[in-house]
Each structure stands twice: as structure tokens, then as C-alpha cells.
Amino acid sequence: VETFPVSENIHRDHILDRSLVPARVDPGVAREAQRLAVALARALDVTGLLAVEFFVRRDGSLLVNEMAP
Image (cartoon, rainbow, N blue to C red; front, side):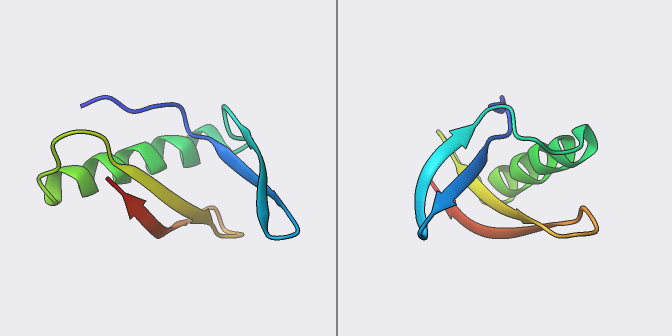
């Protein structure tokens, strides 16, 4: 299993305008996002690519918003 660097999406008028790589988040948040994404892929027995979108809460915790195989 490999992960891509965590990216950050910036929206303008509710439309994706830019994606920044790496994301401007605490390294611990990025590691947790990668750990959760791998755990989800394993739990779902994914073969291939799985994109996982998270929301970062003010306290640094993560919420899964959506996944795309």
C-alpha cells in the first residue's frame, strides 16, 4: 500500500479552484489522514486506487466526507 502526499483543495464560489500539495496542515494531521485512508482501503478490500476526502475540524480531528475508487 502506498499513499500520495495529502493535498488541500481551495474552492472559489463553491467550485474547486486549486489543489495544493502538500496540504498546509500539521504533519500529524497528514499522517492521520494517510493512516485512516489505508485503514479504509483495507477494510473495504480495495484493489487499485482509492481517493478519500476529509474535512479537518478546528481541533485537528478528521471527518471522512467522501471516497472514490
